Length: 373
Figure (cartoon, rainbow, N blue to C red):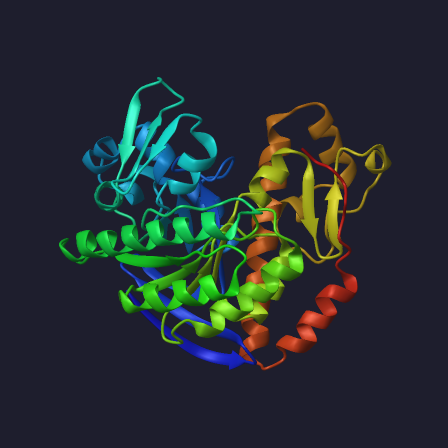
């Protein structure tokens, strides 16, 4: 894997991440394909929307169908019919948030799988091995992500564990064939000094890129933005920076301004299935009755198939009728909206007009408090 910064505007960066499955232009949003599929979309849909890289979920693929099955069927790219790059997470977040029964130790984490109740164990080494079997281009080490708020004592203990696991993951990765990249993850909660320590010690291990973990877990928005800016500025300039799990459009814009290169989030796909579309003027809850007779498209500024073809009134009809097409059309739109937003930011950085873009975005994008799920 290679990474090159091709343009800057303030702290914002435009770059190219070269992988074994193509070049990824950054800043980039990675649609989430939890179980080797971005829900409701085909690989052709993703390519047409402009996706260059997607994210797979190691936890879910471990449980079903299993990494050996994926490996025997040609690896994750062939398994899901995707020609672009793939990043897989470690599965740690899902273990800590979804698995109700777990035992944590220096060795790793033991949990009971929700599908069959079987006891499973993840170690830093096994997580590297699982992702090697899956065949992703970019992989992540096992880490512990704490919810907000967390005491300083708990955060110190968690960070120490994450750093020990990172060292073991780095050694396990180095023993492999070198065909995959491994990113380090910077934790440290809401404590600036612990984040600084995490940056120093994680960078010292020498990863291919660096992720900022433990954000969007309940902390106030100003805290997230400030910590993201501080951590991003402290990370090596010649390595990609990945803000894990953060994905509201306004947060993408602010985080790109902080120097972040990569993002993932389930929001565009999950919210589509709950009836929310993201538009250039803010979120729209399509199931609301006020759209019943609306002939306009979801977003006049959008070039996706949904906006070129259907009215808000028709989309509302599909959604309230629980037609499967509603989920597909809204997902098509949301994914295209996100990828178009990233492309616009890349263009603004290259033209050194990012500040003007940022002001224009927030002048028209109205945040919504509508509950969609």
